[in-house]
Image 1: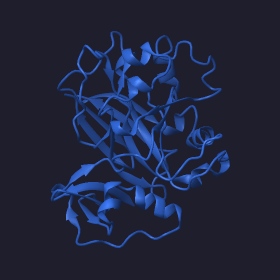
Image 2: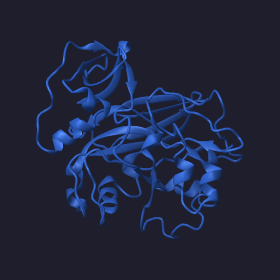
Image 3: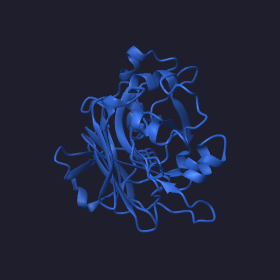
Length: 290
């Protein structure tokens, strides 16, 4: 199923999107639960509880405003750098220079603060050239943890996935390069568009889907997740080593080649640019940079 968080008549609700993507049926959640978006449903599923009952008739999707399915994740998002071979090559002399020499040995893991998450059609705020003049896009498949755990074995990892969504790991490249860690350049306000909903793992095999990204209608990124350097089970195993993962935790799996920094000269985002990301089996998000 597809679980969406949305605004209708000024109130946040959570519901199930119809198979044809034309309607959403709200679910019975308290106002406090609805403020957390889909998180209460993820937590309930991890406890083995059934999905809440419908709260009313289905609404046309055109009558609601979609938000990020997890409008404020419970903690920082886990993100993976250098996880497609071609992307590793295109930034080998810049972002990945000086990183662990063997890209096949360990994944690069960093985080984005939860407050940077915005909806699938929300504007992304450019910070101004005095803060950063090198804003870039990164189309990514993200998984949402269902059943939590620590030291999760690779063989068991997919059973811990609740579902999948899309994120744009927007990045201030100059800030990313300036510091010895990436979190600051990844965590500006509005720098994580997410959505349009969560597709549950029983309907989508995240290990076999396709990630594409267009900037102003020009296809820039196009890759299949079968080509990840570190596959989804390996990422879950790695992130959970000594760290407890909880229901609702998000792991972004890395971006394909074709980012703005990879061009010569680089093609960074400017005011008015529109970035559209589509993942087969999920849908698309589209955000204007302002």
